[in-house]
Every structure is written in C-alpha cells, then in structure tokens.
Image (cartoon, rainbow, N blue to C red; front, side, top):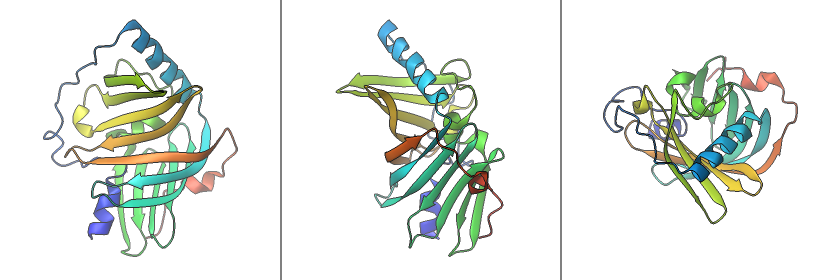
Length: 206
C-alpha cells in the first residue's frame, strides 16, 4: 500500500487535513517591477503551451526516484506513464485526476481543481486574482514562481521552474497539504505536436 500512496503525492494534494500545513490566507510575494515583468512573461509562456511531450524524473517525498513519459494537452489534460516495471499511471482529463496502480488494482480520483497541478492545466492561466504568487526568484538563468489558489491555499502549492533564455518550462515541485514535496524534472521536450486524445481517457481499468 505504501507504494501506492507515495506516488499519489506526485501531483495531488490530500483532501483531508488541508487546513493544517498551509496557511489559509494566501500572502502575495513582494514583487519588484522587474519581478512583475517576469511573472507576466511566465504567464504568457504557459498560456502559449498547447501540447507537450517529454521524459520526466520524479523525486518523491520519501526520496525515491522514478522516470517515465509525460504528455500535456492544455487545457485540462495530462498523462504520466511510469517506466516499467512500475504499474503506475496518472491521467488528468474531464475535470479530474485519476491515479491507477494496476498491480494493486486500486484507483484514486480527485477533482482537478482541488490539486496544485490544476493550476498548470487551467485555460487562460492568470497569475493574479484567483491565483497568488507567494514566492519568486530569478538567479543563475533560472526563474522560479510559487503559486497557490488565492481562496484555498490549503489545497497545496505549485512551484514552476523555468530557464530564462529562452523562457521555457524545465521543472516543477508540488507541496501538498501536509507539507510533503514532490519534484518533477522535465527533459527531451517536444512542444506543439498533435497528441492522440485517447491517451487522456480517464476510464482506466486498474
């Protein structure tokens, strides 16, 4: 059972205890005019991503590493297929996130808008208003911005990591409601290609 629970923390926050680890009032980072310019560019860059395919490496909260293939089709769709012999599969689509362990024959399902990942997949992403930037840094060619839902920061945070020249998504990390962090590194990325929609079918048999 432990193997099933830990990878689930990759992208979804626990719905129980959400009031515990993260403050319930989102606090905006103190951003300079230059920072605000970068935040606007990050917003435009993310909204410019329609489809993406690449490899990923996951560092789980317990320190375990795993790899696989990721597909993204904005808005609202993503698929994480873990390399064999892992039996794990995560699919976002139809407004929900479905995590399946075929070996244990178990499936976990959660509304996409209750997860930090949902911020990345939402249409017309705006890094203001109902999304709050709680931390920002730009150093050594890397730009990082931490995001929460303004009204429900207890759902978890998403930290985006981008190269600054050209501005491009390289990684992200998720902190769930209990303060557990999972990191995702992306590589060998291809963007803008057609993707078969059946990859995002959330009716997966465990």
